Amino acid sequence: QVQPVESGGGLVQPGGSLRLSCVASGFTSVYNALAWFRQAPGKEREAVSCINWNGGGIGYADSVKGRFTISRDNAKNTMWLQMDNLKPEDSGVYYCATYFSGSNYCPMIIRQYDYWGQGTQVTVSS
Image (cartoon, rainbow, N blue to C red):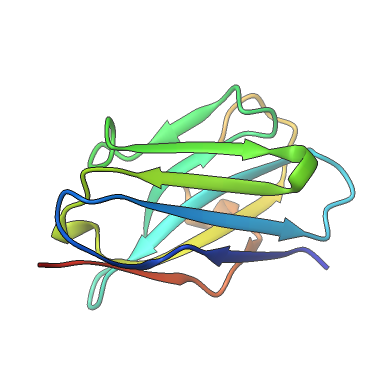
């Protein structure tokens, strides 16, 4: 059973940084795409960033480009999201999601992902 588990959320002031982690256990191969989604209260869940199986295909939402960096280590079944220069509008529950894929690119589409974590709360506030 594939199960992503997120960690690293918290409360941070505007302009600060956080690093989220996602450990995706249960995979029997490295061929999987990973992504971060977020959901703020009263809003729909939205894509933040994604990375393909070998790290060669990466995508970012326009709102986070230049501030967030996604990476992964297949030997550790782990993905990270380094979030810098955080803004109040970055607040929300951040979810890690994954699905089996050997593609050279990753989709920023919710319905594409089969396995989801429980989420970790990120709050950006002074």
